[in-house]
Length: 394
Image: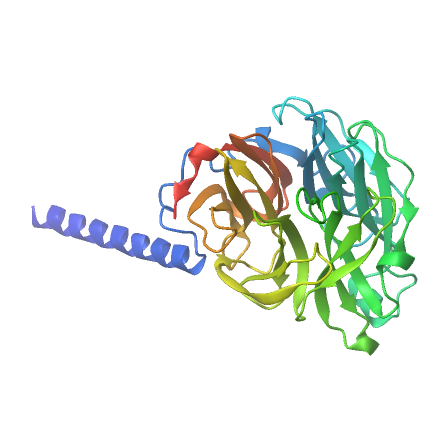
């Protein structure tokens, strides 16, 4: 009897230690209060959620998601299709898949841009709500050039910016047109459009203006500092120019949305930080001010996505990223006060996850396209449709 009692005590001690270790790990990763009991479906139990899966359609890896809803309701999911590895350089094509049923099923892979062994990517699409035309900005570099070489000025070529358009809801696209000279300054080395959707301002003095979030890094000789910025178009995407730049450096990939009062909010990846930078614009993206850290938006130094719209006639802002100091815990957060506070959330995937993009599907659902897996974040790009009534309070 004593032996049995002793065994029970030992077993209880082991369980207590395991619970303690798990609890510490959860705290380190900022997984939130319900990590031990995630909501049903908040995982990747099968491949059924993947739109782009590693080692499929002739590509080793898919990364860098972007998503929009066309004027006719078609949902377009974009990605970089990386031919030989998951690396950021080399033979990379820009591809998409289309869904005409709100993301339930997806059509075949469509190549938007393939330039042989060179790097074509960073999709940043935006829809003109008047005509339905989809405009997308993208970036290019020589396939043998690396980020460091581009920044040092020792690369074969440089980072270039291109434009393509679709007038049939994403089924076909125009040939890539270079616009580097109007959107990139000579002292800038590395450059990235998005990667996520752009916006078209819906109200106020700047209604109709298209805004694409971007970032750049100065050439090493010019200081090597990194900033977020936006590109602006007042002619439905035909021409583009440089808009506001983040007031401080150490900002990187960014995302932008329109607030209820017509201002724009720029939300930025913080180089070396553990929470997001934010800044606001009162002049349609011409300038950004009041740059500060939003400590409620914890991050592992990773891209994130911002969008806004009405839910039950109440204006709402949504943000997605790996809500952790490591690349796990893909989460959507909900704000009812223009991002001042984040009162609700939905955990999309508790495991390894990285880049994402959000799209308002209807007045009852939001969609998220995100990188996720069980062993690494880069096993595929998945899509999930989330009902607003599935969000829970923080």
